[in-house]
Image (cartoon, rainbow, N blue to C red):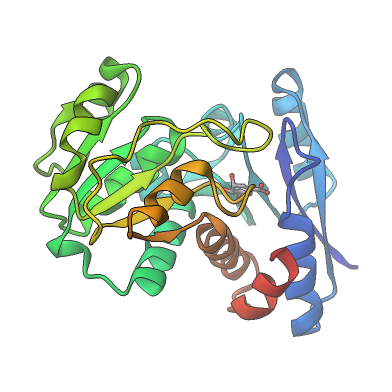
Length: 272
Ligand code: SKM
């Protein structure tokens, strides 16, 4: 029987995961289908149990379920537990196993597209949500010189820092302080949804003090170039959007499900 995979979220119609994974299955000759399922928060438990009952082989989890799904899984990998969010679920003989491939996916894309060595970087992470957590912990684990945080709600960023299993030098700034001190950073990572379609005129903070030698990453991929990235580019910085992270988090999930590494260039061609 053909294996069934999918992604659950609310909303979900915008997701590029089905196109990307179905292309990877096709390219490898794997007889499987990947679908997007609209699951609202009140239906999450029923959906997870239902997918187990009908024999779904694995699925991705997106907003707003990455934390809420954790109690419904049978085991959780250490990194996902540490980050406090799951975006990939694998069927095992014991039930559902949860993983987080967002942090590793981000890191792979960052290293590849920037060519930089993270251990030399002074980093600023903007935001303190689920994606920020995955990225912040991963950057600290990679041994960045400093990983400072800024967020509209300072307390939330402080909690994220204090709960980090990988302590690293890290200050928490207001958005205004971050704007003023922006020139000190060599790597800036924007993890909020500010600037995402349809609010493309918004940006989380001004880049007027940006160091032109800095590398600026925005995890949004719709639009491909946010206002934040556009402004950073105008100041001479090299930039990266969220497409690479999206592709690599998917490729790592795909390998967990099938045991096979997919062709990421083919996956990229589909979503670009
Ligand atoms: O973490 C990923 C998730 O695996 C899939 C996804 C999507 O389909 O839009 C987005 C991210 O949350």
